[in-house]
Figure 1: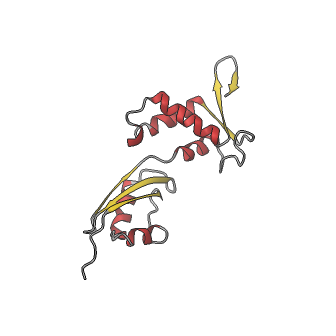
Figure 2: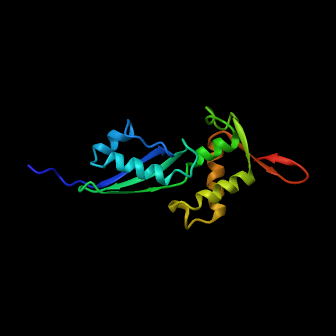
Figure 3: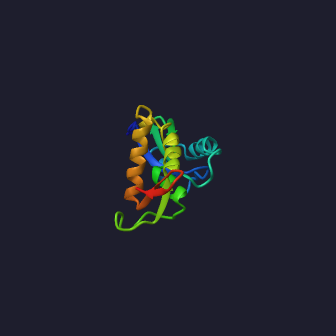
Length: 154
């Protein structure tokens, strides 16, 4: 009996420059018929300019003939916010607990990076900033609006 030709999409997060055949990535690729060594080599080459260990959202399109293509996006908003606020994780009780703070300038810089992603290409930069501010609030991160006279929290 011939094996079925299966194609599909695999969405995953892979650490930049650290794709390896070991679990959990190797088995996930193997059961879909993807050449694990080839994928790891191509992914690590494509992400070598990014700081090692940064989680990269990746979409892998595979076909039954063992061919594949993949696209990477910029790291998640939560990764950028945690880095900017200097925290390990978000609040346990968002809204009642504040674990860090970021400035509007930092929000703007994150938005410029995320604007390059396919999901945000046709979205105005202001809307991307508002989305990031909502994520910050849900993580328990204050947004500091600073001007020359004083600064206040949002």
